Image 1: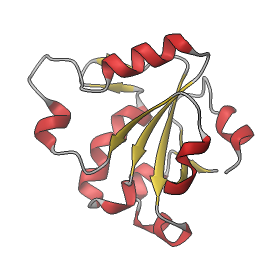
Image 2: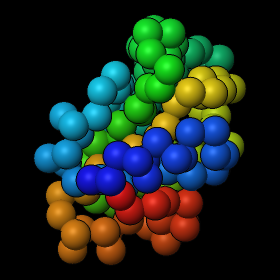
Image 3: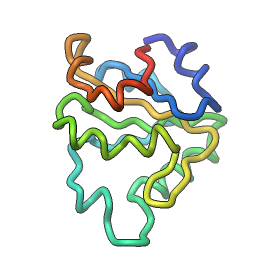
Image 4: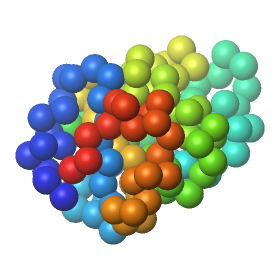
Length: 128
């Protein structure tokens, strides 16, 4: 994992970073969301806050940088991966804007799993 490359993504709109599952612990101040989360849990009630909002807000105030880790993106179908496209592309989800000091991180099992990421999503990713 190239932590310098990851930190360069701070303030860059429409980018995300891809790391291996085993490297997540090397990041500090992170919030994890499993990519295989059900639609019901992810989207919750209409006009409600996303389930990750409170933790991201709390962690973003603790440190100058917070990592929003979407764990195991390679383990879900490509159409399910694209639920996270707005988080990367627009830095927004269901009306909630990600904090400015937030870097979106996707994890995969290994190098061969990179090809399991949807082309639409991978277009916005940097492999670190």
